[in-house]
Amino acid sequence: MILGFTIGFLDIKWVDILDVIFVTILLFNVYKLIRGSIAIKVFLGFLFLYLAYLLVKAANMELLTSILGQFMGVGVLAVIILFQQEIRKFLLILGRTTAFNEGNLIRNVRFWSTNGSLRTAEVNPIIDAAKTLGGSNTGALIVLSKNSELKFYADSGDRMDSLLSKRLLLSIFNKYSPLHDGAVIVYNNRIVAARCILPVTERDDINPSFGLRHRAAIGMSEATDVLIIVVSEETGQISVATNGGISTNLSPKELRAAINDYLFEEQIDNTSILDKVKSEESREEEKSS
Image (cartoon, rainbow, N blue to C red):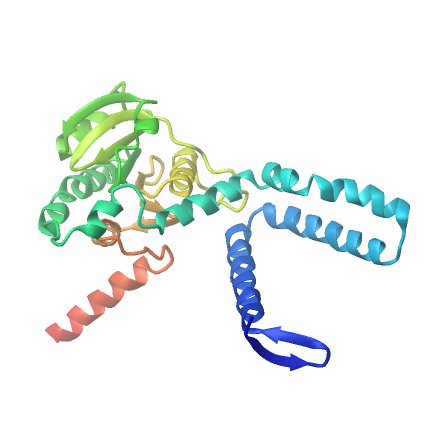
């Protein structure tokens, strides 16, 4: 092995430096993943227990070492049980970044591109429907997927396979429609299913004013790589959830920007959508002046 340098009695190799860097990156990303959730407290408690085990083992306290050693012996199983939601989210995020993500492998080996104008034109029925629903304070939950039809979640509702249109969306979410209770899944410019059941987030740092629709939207964005549009029944405000975050009180123009960012595979910063649209508006005002 190639020797890097020596510090006292330690022989530091370049592979050791890379090892430390990779572990640091891994721990930092794990911290970002569980930051703000109850899992961070469990993680710190588990870390404290492990440090206590190392101390009593170094001090040759055999009885305490054997007791804590029993906990450490099942540590991997305990971590899987305690952090099952976080591990699942981490694996989903990891899977989104690979070339083998559903539908991405074929796109990666293509030497031609799809016509993006068709994809952007089809967002008009969604934006128009959301605007109308918000104006009448009609609650709605629309899941927009670009990679798959989400068969597992589509099967929880009523299959439709209908062409996407504003009038159909308004009919589905009409308060007297039997299909209004639940989510609509949109894929490939078609309404795959309605009255679908979405997973509700288990995070405890969610805004208390959010209802079940907003919590279901956040939970769905944590579990899948989709964009969810929420229309509040109480306020009529439009919200967008993606990657475990949510942006609220969006205008139709901001909604269009968020959908276009998602369709063209750009990562959406849920805290900066408003700033992005406002900066574009300010640039247009400067040009006009």
